[in-house]
Length: 570
Image (tube, rainbow, N blue to C red; front, side, top):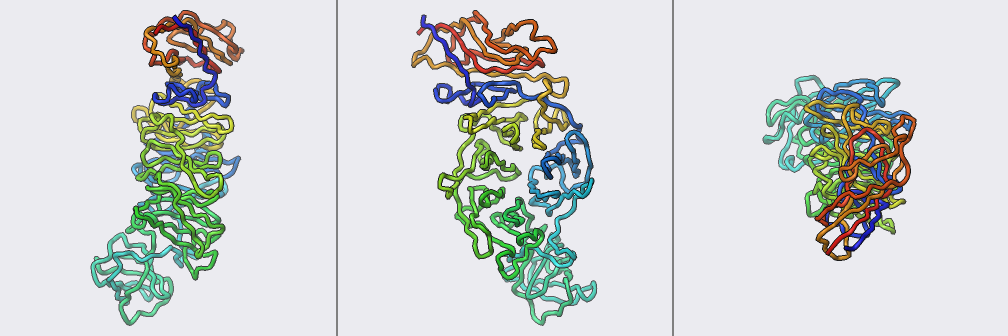
């Protein structure tokens, strides 16, 4: 029999897929559950979960960070937003979003306000003033509330339709708009119409050819039918923006149902004003992505450039500064993002991380060495099996962890530290299903569903259980060994040695690791050092892991290395 000794003192790649088991350049594991990979490559038990609140039903959470010291978690449930400061409920507001609509919400924030968009619902703004919050419709009107400042466009179905104006039923500033064919719908109520120097708002639908409108100022009835007019780019008929960000002191909206590749930028410093004006450098900008494929804008990200992620690729607007006459749009990559619901891209070490439209890739958008072209590298190339139809995403820059909530209820967690060579995926499981995740003040909050009960909880390094009573079942398995091209017919393990730190409980291959009695004293931090276990038995199949570290007792464990000693025959 041939003897072997194999030491693994780094787990820097976390759980990897079977096709990479025999790759000597990868420091991975066959399985890693409820454990994190440390900056030095070791393993430790993940933080436990502490309950914050029981919720009224299904929920999605977002963070609202006003400053480094003032951070909030927003819990969106059915037509309600509850605002938490750490573990304390601060205020509850009525909202326009039903449970079914939560998956499509996107947001951006600046200072003490957040703007929320949804393709079916007009934008809303959440504002903190003093000690209270308010949620209201985002206004596209000037400070007087009279003059609309919507972006405008001409729709295809308007062509060939003329409008005749007659005196309206609601006074001198109202008019009857009669179309030359069936054009109007009830969804046109609230639409802005502009022709010549006149701006109107449709206030009542009568039938497919007739609506009532009001002017923002006194008007004179035109003597002929209007054949050339514009309508607001956002309304209930044609849809509302699905994405939003701030960039170069402009508020930027992207994509509607009617114009999925449209981009609208406010005037500089005037975030409610999308009036194109006369095209001066600081005035509003409207543009559309053009390509052979129908580009549906999924996300807008403000970085060194304005990044535009669509259903079919990754674009960037590079101009510094952006002006109406200076728009340089370029498609860099062709990966594509998830459509149908919102998965907010995350900034990690200066790069943009997003979920691809295959729902199996986590991509990193980064500039090449010349700073000219973006690449979209795959962050989960060794562990695609851990990505299962993501439903939420968040990054904790304090712990350097990326969280991907999967449809099946677990979380794929990436512990990443590029400078130290750590890019380790693992999975988190708990007593129920994870459904949403957000970061606030350096802490990671989650929604857990268990038997139709929903809870807001957060990870805590001082908790060794989930929700006080549930055990954390952890496990880590080594990858099958490479026996220099040989195929063993019989394997025998003689000994396993572990280097531990501050450890009080663990099992390996279903046998308890025997630790000195004094480590169980409450005052003891746990055992630190090397410990061995002899004669762990035999294993025939060389294609499966030779060791599995596991446990569920509420005690700490940290492992720096695993060494196995054994014999094999060929």
